[in-house]
Image 1 (cartoon, rainbow, N blue to C red):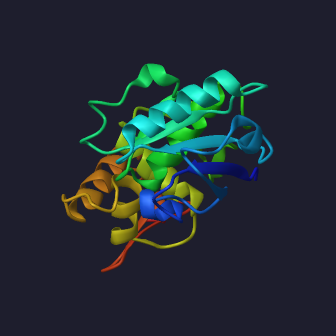
Image 2 (cartoon, helix red, strand yellow):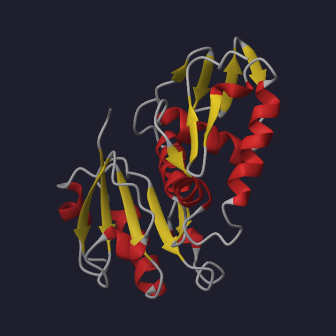
Length: 230
C-alpha cells in the first residue's frame, strides 16, 4: 500500500487529531509546518502528497498561505485542502487556491475519500485496489459494487459501510466503530442507524447472499466470503 505524506500547516496545534479528531492514521504520515511562515521551498523539500491548511480560526492566514503556495511552488502543486468549521466555511475565499475542503468533524472515510479525489484531479497517487470478498467486488475509485458480476445500486452511505466492512473482511466490527468511521464520531443518530443500513444492504445483496453480512449478537457485524447455508 502506498504511504501518503500529509503536511499540515498550522500555528495552533501540534497533532493532526487536534484539528481532525477522526483522521485515519494509515496510510498517512503527517508532518507539521507553520501556516504563516513556511515557504514553498521548505515545504517542497518535505515531498508532500497532500497539503492541509488549518483554517478553523486563522482564516486570513490560511487564505494567504494558499496564495503563497499557489504562486511560489516550483513544480506541480500537490492537492491543497483547507480544514474548516461550519462557522468559517461561509467566509473562506476558495479562489485563494485551495482544491477542496474538509470539515473538522469529518469522518475518517470522508477524509480518505476527499484526499483520493483531490489527488486524482491533479494526477497524484495510485488507483485504489479492488476489494474482493468472495463473489463481492468493491471498487473504491468509482464507487461501484458487483456481486457475481451483477452491479448493486447503493447509496453513498451504504457504499461506505460495505467498503469499511470489506476492508476488514472476516473481522468483527462493533456498531460504535462503524458509526464513528462511516458517519463521524459526533453523529447523533445512534447505532440504530447502522442496523437500518445493514438491513438495506442485505436486501440489495438478495436472499442468496444476505448472510454475507453476519450479525454478531450484542456486538456488531462481520463481512464473510461465503453466505451461510440455510
